[in-house]
Length: 266
Image 1 (cartoon, one colour):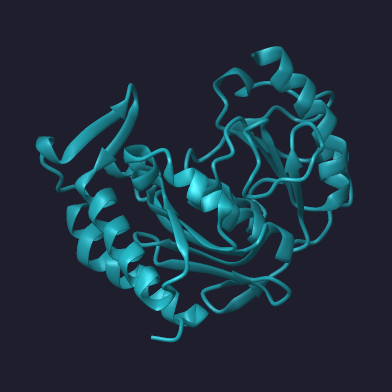
Image 2 (image 1 turned 90 degrees about the vertical axis):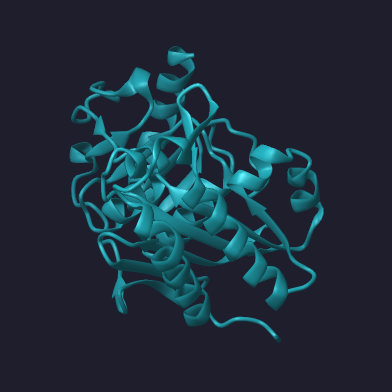
């Protein structure tokens, strides 16, 4: 196999979800849900789906290093191999596992492809919503085949924010409107920003498997993102918080306010 087209990888995610994830939705037995760390859940669906996706990617690209969320949890040294590699994929087999376990449709399968430190392709498949988001660097972001572009805000002082950071929920950044709770799933958060349901999102954690897909999509839609301290966000970023915004002007206004708020919350 010489490689997989963007459409072929989307089909892969859809087929894996249909075979291994959706049949378990609202049907998980107690022994099929485990806790990696306090409050951090994993299910048989996460593990089996990641194995299937990783196997297909490595068969198509023998030189690739795949950083899967569950594989990294089992073997943290995988991160070193991922950072040393030129051609990489990240896989989050069930983003929003807690939502999935609780029977919420707000979960997703996410994959991103990178060359060196540049994310070049990204996929988010929301199986219960039946919505596919796909992006290629320089070619835009597409929702079920329709291109999506965010129009810059006319009044950035009215920007609507969301966050999953407990200490910031219900808080204001400067004179901006009070931030709402995010959808607590990056594979749902980013699409809501792209659809215009919020104008910026603040995160404390910035794991590559959570954020590489969505940040490429936001960039391709005309948005902007970076670490909370203003430095660029890449697959090598070390978790200094993340700010994602619908347009560069909103990012420029929110970033210093977010940095201050995150510093105070620690």
